[in-house]
Image 1 (cartoon, rainbow, N blue to C red):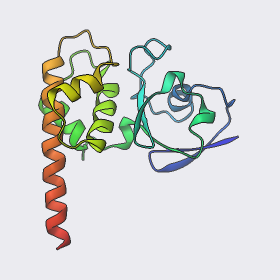
Image 2 (cartoon, rainbow, N blue to C red):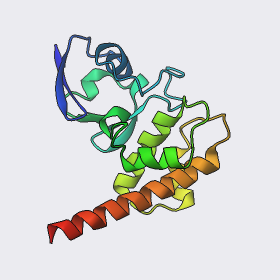
Image 3 (cartoon, helix red, strand yellow):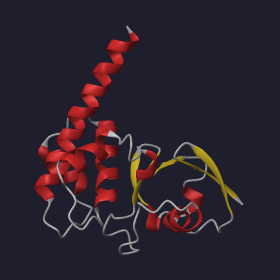
Image 4 (cartoon, rainbow, N blue to C red):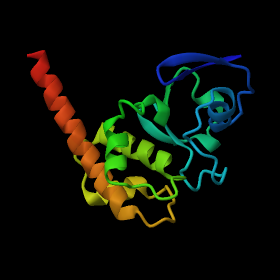
Length: 163
């Protein structure tokens, strides 16, 4: 039995330490935003955030995330109250088939947590490991910039309310 911290909650899971995190997220915790794409860590559709860093969950064994905070797309926001990154991707209509989008959003979220105002080049470099064949790359780029502005606005509003 292992304890995983996922989306701010502790979960007891009965799995072998070498079980890929993706399998537990999808099969045991019913968190299905992270997708099984290649199973080899080459497509990025399984990306989640572990302690602030984008991680390919299909090749990350549970033993490496025990005691760390795992965040999936479901942990960022809800349909009624989407997180800035989710809202931006919807507003820019950045998804076409949608298979890669959860991984793209998670990798972009990790970038924005480190760098709240990334350049186009920085966004492209960060998203490079995630494959997308739909051709919405320019919309994705705009969505990340929009999310950065939304996060900046939310931070400014929060600062004003504290005063």
